[in-house]
Length: 221
Image (cartoon, rainbow, N blue to C red; front, side, top):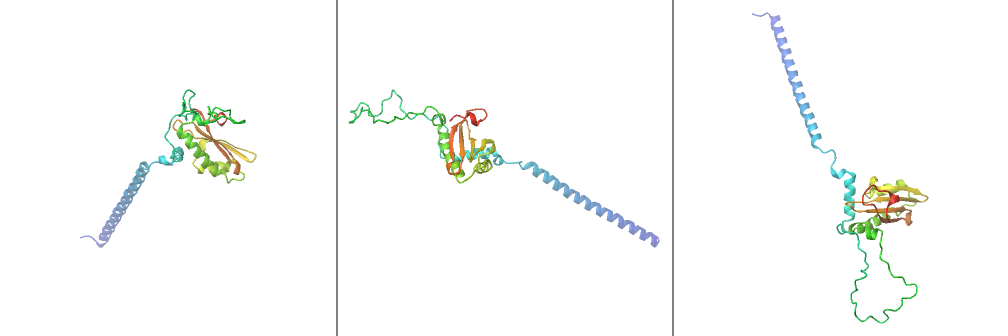
């Protein structure tokens, strides 16, 4: 038979072992939970894309160009001259000419000359149409600037969707801030040349080289 002191010692030893086992189990459980949380976080990071395509500036810029040109026709060849070929007779040719036909036009009258260069003949139908829309939206946005600075002009252009990579030659000259926009897309040659000057703001479309870097001073208008 064990002595009372031995029973007390044995009981204390058993309690210590039970306590250690319990602590170990708790620590192991916490470790497993932590590992699971860390693993879940890592997996979530791997499965989540760093940034969707819609977050890329270039993608947003292309989307803006499509939205502006949404009402325009699809890409096509350069706009053909509206004048009729010299060897083609107009409708009604051969009929009796009206009274006065063949008379000398009044002094000072100028016959229209079909354009042979510039945006009207060098841009395809879609870019020609979109160019007018870009002219209008940019002009309206800059119209209320009393003394436009390059910083203000850039901010407005950015708000309209024109990214910094497509804004060129932004500089101030007196009360006028000049800039160019490279709007080439899908093989097009559209560009804009603008001067922000409040109510005297002017934005015109121009023709950029088909390939290569955009240089404002070398654009064709």
